[in-house]
Amino acid sequence: MSDISNDPNEEPLQEGEIPFSAAPARLTVDLGAIVENWKTMRTLSGSARTAAVVKADGYGLGIEDVGEALYGAGAADFFVAVPEEGETLRRFAPNARIFVLSGIWPGTEEVFFENDLVPVLASTEQLSFFFAAVAEYGDYPCALQVDTGFNRLGLTVEEALALAGDVSRPASFEPVLILSHLACGDDPASPMNKTQREWFRIAASAFEGVEASLSASAGIFLGPDYHFDLTRPGIALYGGDSQPGTARRLKPAATAEARIVQIRNARAGETVSYGATCRLARDSRLAIAAAGYADGYHRSLSGAGAPLRDAVNPGGFGFIAGRKVPIAGRITMDMTIYDVTDVPESDIRIGDYIELIGPNLALDEAATAAGTIGYELLTSLGLRYRRRYIQPD
Ligand SMILES: *Cc1c(COP(=O)(O)O)cnc(C)c1O
Image (cartoon, rainbow, N blue to C red; front, side, top):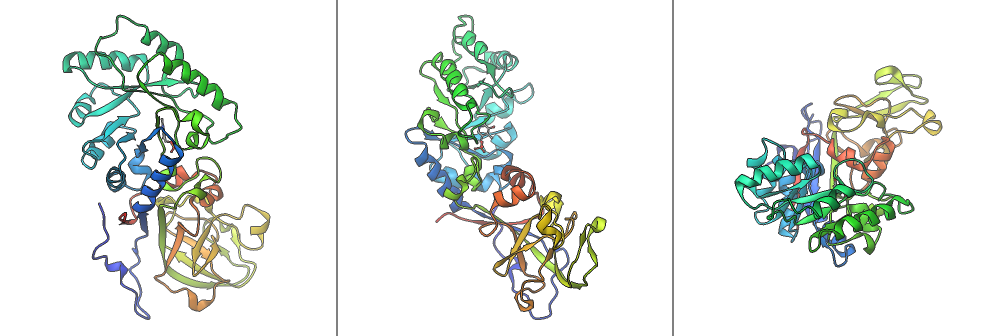
């Protein structure tokens, strides 16, 4: 949970004082921004209700704090990936409806029943197991996932239609939600979107009176035809792009920073880090920050040295003293080296924080430089950060 009190590392360093070398990186999660983003997605969802997707520990930012803040703001429907996440969330969202996307499997029934979790059934095998489990337990809600072209989870549309017309299914079987997932929601021009939507309409209309849900963050931006009864935003809540550029309408929710633990001068011609891949073209000043790929700062963000930087993939950047500074050479497990030659010497001191992602370095900009997506950067930040939560107003 929140860890903002009595943080000894928050004391400003005295002149000449050296921070301990295990100086932790810190992750600041703005719960107010997450709540605002949820409200933005709710407005964009029009007349549909808006759920919150908090799987993978709230996209890496902490399911407990994120779930509690969203629940407090009025979110009544949540999606998690696995029942254990639902069990954790239940403590912070006592009356919410919690859907478990991976469905129910032998051995997990108790976690479902004890925590009032709704399984999203996605295959005929899961249906059979669910029917057997509730035959003993009694009536129990479930959701159905239909596959409309993603080929991941879900009954085929044919199977769903057969189920709807199956008179031999248990009389008490009454799904509370039917859902599907778009493959190309990030690309408004993709013809896949309409095709999936039409297949979904066919499947959903066979379950009269059952709420329908098609859209994650990206689908919400596709417009009202994609909203149905319930929308399921995830990445948008955390300030990330689902369609290119959509994060600009949202607030950054996560700021990851690492401490500068050493500043060194190096001569033109010297090389930096493993593989000596970065050769310095000028006398340089390098700032060493205590975060690396074990902190989810992907090695693929590694940078070349000037002037190669202009010719090849420039790699990623940090932000310190009001400016962007390039990563020099390979990112290592626990350390990253920045070229701070262009920053006035008096502007950076040992112990300062350098921003890895945050308001000055957009999540998606860093993700693009790393050759990945914001989702992956957030969910790989890992456990070494000292976490701080800013409560909603
Ligand atoms: C992860 C997920 C979501 C949320 O997706 P975002 O792109 O993060 O908004 C919604 N629905 C399903 C089925 C998912 O797996």
